[in-house]
Image (cartoon, rainbow, N blue to C red; front, top):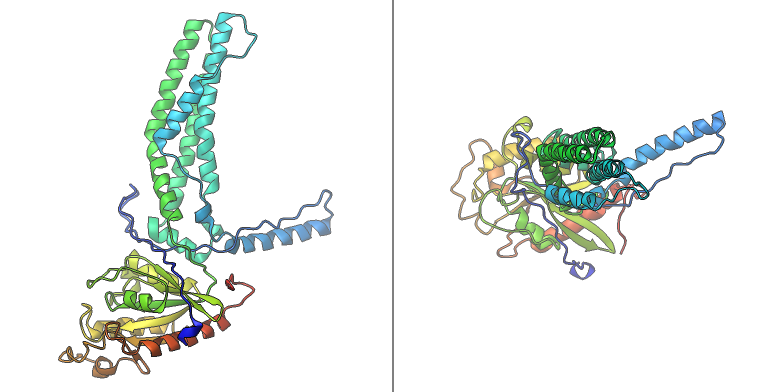
Amino acid sequence: MNSSIRAFNLIQQWRLPCSKLPMGNTRRAAIGFMSGTEERRTDSFSSSPSPSSRNSHSSTCQITKEEKTYQSVGAFQKLPMVMPAIDILSSAQRKARNVSPTKGIANIAKRERNRAAKHLDTLMKELAVPLRIYVESFPNRKHLHPYECSLIELTFGEGNYEQVLGRVDSLRKKLTSVAKENAALCAKSSSKREAGERLSEGLKKIDHVFQQGKSALDDLLHVAKTLRGMPVIDPHLPTLCLVGAANVGKSSLVRVLSSGKPEVCNYPFTTRGILMGHIILINERFQVTDTPGLLPRKEEERNNIEKLTLAVLSHLPTAVLYVHDLSGDCGTSPDNQYTTYREIKEKYGDKLWLDVISKCDILEESSSYKSSFNEEYQKIGPDDAIRVSVTTGEGLDKLKARVHELLLSQMARVDPMEGTKEKL
């Protein structure tokens, strides 16, 4: 089996952002993101549409909009480079100062008011145009894959992504309004001195508006860096999702099974985001994800880090490898693990499933723990579970063989017309 597999070094990891946006107290999670097909435009137009052709065009547009939901995958990697607010202002001011009055104006007063009006107009354009491009270039969540939508929500909080874009657009509109108003006053100046005074006053007002709203640009810069830095995941590629409580050994198994090299530490919540690896099997590429640990609590009480795991299970074509640690070493008792396991198995039981008992090398040493209500689970775990130890290598060959069978079965479930499976 090993001869049919070749793993290549590719791991992309996204962690919880250290910086915080001033967008309320929403708890944020760090998430892995995915890239797939390039966006294609298929709109068709007719120079003289008949009623029937209009109906046909309407149908085509409707199909195009539906397709765009999936064609927009990878939009985060295409985001524009957002400049810091101070750089945008400095560049605009420098270009505006170099503006000359229109040639051929002999009257000094007319020439000065022309220069002043053009100065403000140039400053307005140099500030407003980049902001408009930013707002138009960031994807609308309605056109994204459902998983991508959940990434935005879990990263920034519900509605905060749109709020930042709205603040940037509001700043653009206010700058445009103030600049136009003051440029018009400059154009009506009756003397060179008056034109200069009105120009000075207009520049102060524009700078005041920009300083008041520049935090929106700082937030947008943070959003752009966060989204662009998310790992690339194909939402249509068969995926093995490792699920379980915190610190049960999921990250160690990702290292064994795939090209992923996540951090492995012996304390809870090492994984604070989605970690990605890949497996190459019979000329097909598969994804392997390590997800944040789940705690035994109701779904509505889960934090955004835990919700990442549910988002992967809900929106990606995943087969589940559920990891159990019956030794008690992970910090979550077997009783609590069993409670969470039953909940997840009931909700996602339609998925292909494989149970694994990790850390079996220390399981015998920890056998003194007695389950309060399910001693059978404490002793052997779920039916047909594979017992493994990354430390001693016990059960790993059997696990790899079962994982390969699981992924090939999962591939058969994925419609190739909808996927972007990469044949190598």
